[in-house]
Length: 243
Length: 243
Image (cartoon, rainbow over all chains, first blue to last red):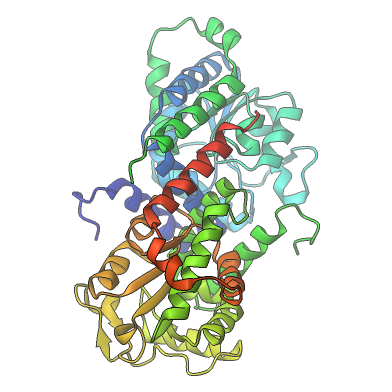
């Protein structure tokens, strides 16, 4: 039991959820290593949403609002950390949810679809994947024809670099959430939110409710500049550290 | 199978060893999350030994050479990543090896002692711990009377902050290897090598063979300054990144 007063309560609770997710077969074991990497980068951000990530959330909201067929791709880590938030965002954005796994097994897809349904989701896609993302080896390319395959905008939080590139090559607009601003995924996506998924998803939802000139935001969005601002923020923060 | 030509071969092999270690019951599952954090920080270092970490390895060599009863504390992650290197360093430094675990179970201690023996180690301490590190709750404080308890110098790679502080309070000289220069362990130890354990341990051994004025090195060692230099190195590196 972690007391709520613990200074790193949120972080320790997330770790607990990932660890339990592995035990329940929802999270692939390497998802724990990925989570650890995320913890380190979140630590460098100060475990809060930094201003350039907040701007990226506005851009993500713009792409979701203007999408014709938006899909939120959910893997094990995303599900155990923020199932409810994904479901709420999907409702707000009129988007579909697809369980799509890097280390795909039909058993784990089924468990995650059920998990998302138990959290209140409906029509969760992912089972019996009937289409393929070109350029990816067999299991990693599987997806749903009415989901990711035909989507114009995909939100892929915590995505692998190869898969992010393959989605881009299909002509989709790709929004990602990645705590590492240097990752290939971060550099490949159209909109990269350098933030923890548990903060970023509710934040996108908040931004969707605001009034903005969404076309203007999309027109002016410079993802590379945003990543540079994230790096500048991190290095400024580290440079000011007092030992 | 990871091809040797892969640009991140070493890193992926380490991940594989940790993952296998969990399956064999040598590594606690949260060791995977800790490893992921390490991966992220190693990535920030460029996955190589930076100059201030090289200086810290010289200081570590000095303390080990001048020790009366040096002990190398080995946990699951350290064992699966660098068992042989720890055994060789212990021989070179005339140090003992003790298996000492944060998430202690007698079964895992036994497995790790056997693992170290299979790797060529002898007289590996840790079983039937008969002493306690004051100030730590029951299982976390257990240690061996002829090992950590009575040591004047302890090398604790990948150590927890509370335990590092408790060892310092016992009056020991503490050498740690920690990829995060901001961690409590890093800031508490007498000598902090901000490097990957697989590079740092052979490096200490190399330094031990060099000729140095060891007393002078110990007298002049400034760990805080070293940590500041590590941070400066990381921030310089991040600032120069081209998107």
